[in-house]
Image (cartoon, rainbow, N blue to C red):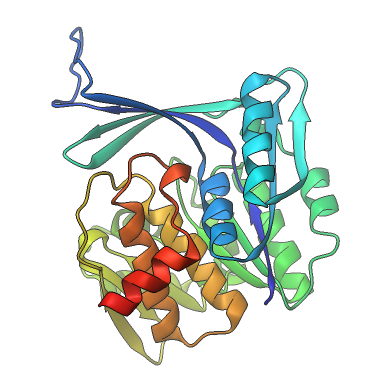
Length: 304
């Protein structure tokens, strides 16, 4: 199996399940509060590792108790954390996640996760080869996303971009999409990337491919996902599960998709595997804590 390198954030999540969205100058009592390790980078690395992949995580935490806890948990999971640096003054990133009717909203304090440097990334990817998978998201500054993808492209690795969390209005991102082998956005992220109001997923995927992306895998919540490569379109429906929390679903999907790539599977098998992982993540509260094991994913597929 190929190695998977994940460049992203390690975050402490505080998840509030609420009956109503909080309004200005008002308060809402949560039905449930969950403390969980998170961050897309951490979640995706944990997802892939629990599915028996060889995973290295590249990021930055604060020199504080939260950072120490996240590093300890990743080590226990089996993720290589040799290239997670500690920043002496920045605080470990935190996110408040507000969940109503299984729909999450996010309040981020990204501090340390955005202190990673180009030198950190270059050192961490020194051993990257053409056999490896390189996954990056938008938790790090945009110029460093491009640097990461350029390194992966130059070394011949399979580059995967998850354009989330999407809080940039800079079309700079379009300048480096030609470095991306596989992009995994949802509909809203696709619209933001392409400055399009279209609800047509096929049209959005084609617009992304027009910017040089080789493969688009569009995730569409409870409907499923769609694969586009310019020659074929392959649709995969979501698994029917009892949903309690969708917060970790996309990260479970992306981690599992990269595992499929690392195993060299064909597209239908990868989509089925990733969809099963995402479905199972919806059946458990939390983010990293909801990432399923390989046995659980294989059992769900076998029961279909």
